[in-house]
Each structure stands twice: as structure tokens, then as C-alpha cells.
Length: 67
Image 1 (tube, helix red, strand yellow):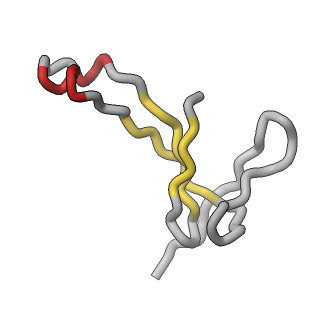
Image 2 (cartoon, one colour):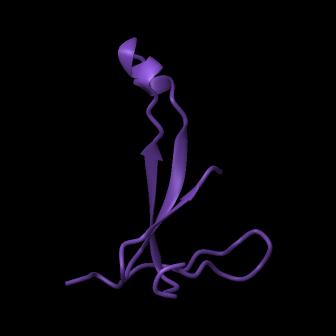
Image 3 (cartoon, helix red, strand yellow):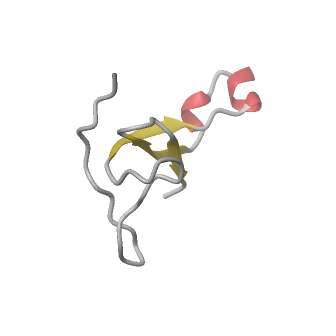
């Protein structure tokens, strides 16, 4: 069972984001931290960058962006 509620994502160049897998046009926005082995070893994971991700509301494919 999937929760197909979500919102469209406007792209900088115009148009909207479509899922590369199923063609759906609604997504859930999430932020994920990009962990590195060095930062984890020294217990400073908070210094790592984050990525903006849009999760397709239909098939759950994750589209990653470095914004």
C-alpha cells in the first residue's frame, strides 16, 4: 500500500520533476545527511553536508539533489 499524497516539485529551468522510474509527478521532500567514514571515526558527523531528496509518492524511488 502506498501513500500517493505528495506535492509537485518545480525545477529551476521550468517544468516539474517526474519520477525516472514510474513517471509520477508527486513527491515527499526529505533531507538526508551524507556521512563520511572520517567524520564518523572522529565523532563529528554533524559537520557532514546534507542532500535534499524527493521520494516518489508512488514507487518510493529516491531522487537526490545537492542544493
